[in-house]
Figure 1 (cartoon, rainbow, N blue to C red):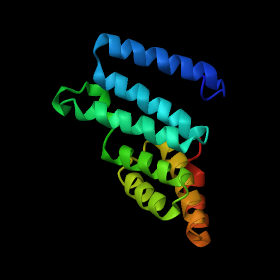
Figure 2 (cartoon, rainbow, N blue to C red):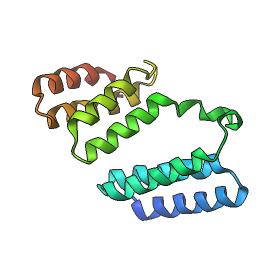
Figure 3 (tube, rainbow, N blue to C red):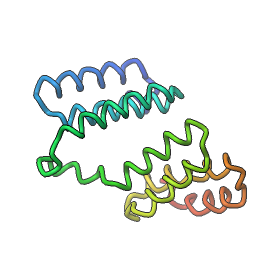
Length: 150
């Protein structure tokens, strides 16, 4: 909520606190999730390099875990979700071609009932298409996701 209301310092403080609690509790999955949220915040503030470093740290933590031990709420973080996150990173790094590829692949796995996510990542896909100079595809994508906006 702090991040969505542009209280970035407060958001970072809560992410840091939740990360410390996760580490203290020995919950590597939750620690990884907090790093993911910090990476998302770095991305939203335009700090691409910090975003990449945090995402790489998250990957290292996840690599140490066994997927069969993941809690049931991890259902949301599937291959498609990670493809879309990679697409967002590529978009922020200015690579429209790679961003388009990752976002299209990720969106193809996203259930229709995730209207908000489909609208958000669809708008990002339109931006990636425009970045690579494909205005026609960008307009078509934007018009396609516009009805999905809440």
